[in-house]
Image (cartoon, rainbow, N blue to C red; front, side):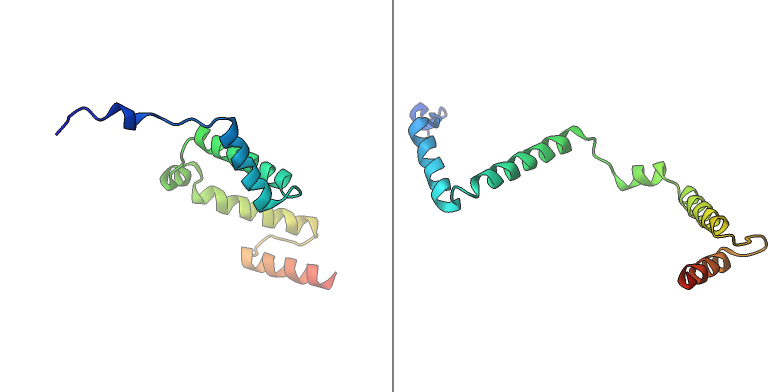
Length: 111
């Protein structure tokens, strides 16, 4: 019924040189000397990606939807389709987007 925990059980253990050498030796035996540089690179990349993820602000789906409205996306696709048709020399006046896309496909397949 002690409210204060035993101080001896709360001692934090630190890794000294012998412990680090033992860990390094076990890793060397498991992976071999040729794989150690690859393992170190992979750990470095993982740490870098983790730190970059911590720095970035979390994005929610609603904020992404607000920043990219659907009309802008459709308009840009339409513009790309019209520009492609003009580059191929296809007349776009009075035609629907589907008709223009079909003509582009026919022109590309024939070349």
